[in-house]
Image (tube, rainbow, N blue to C red):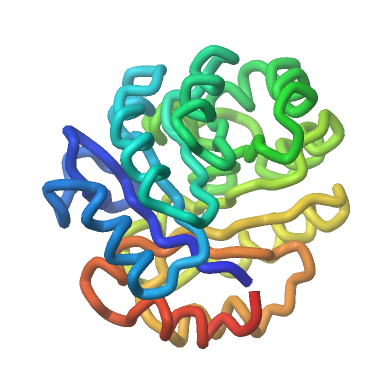
Length: 245
């Protein structure tokens, strides 16, 4: 399983939100590049970048920061936030992103996902972010009526082969992963022939070991943010808890 240290960008800084609430923000690095360089120095094999300003604005805002991070990283960098049309996706890919993560656009325009998967093979990831089992969109500020399993099945049939699953209720809390929903999402991904990356609630090495012990075939990665920033463990320690990539 691959560890993806998270770099969430808002107002030009590296921050973390609690449960997707923009009013519950903690700033960790004045410069997001500092966070990226720290995770890389600790042995990160991939990075996960979120443009929080873009998620709210509906278009990328921090492309310059993405460009700086990807220029410094010799590992895959996946980027999400405000990517709701083909031009926005192209801008972020041109800035050096290895993959892009679609959220709102994936739910509201499945045909766009299908077209992007054809135009950018293996570079499109779909964010299956959920609150109470329902997909949350627009920077997690609006809850839809779509279920996670249905979203994965539908978009996998349109060419999406990688999904990020985040239960909003535990994100940023450090209280542990939401395993029941994860098992369901991983099962849907496996059935659809897709991979799943988990995000949300990781606060200890025991939490990471719990993910590894699931032995869910579709679960190929985990995104960790706040626990790394607060030095609850290092990237290398996390990699050890997760086992071989």
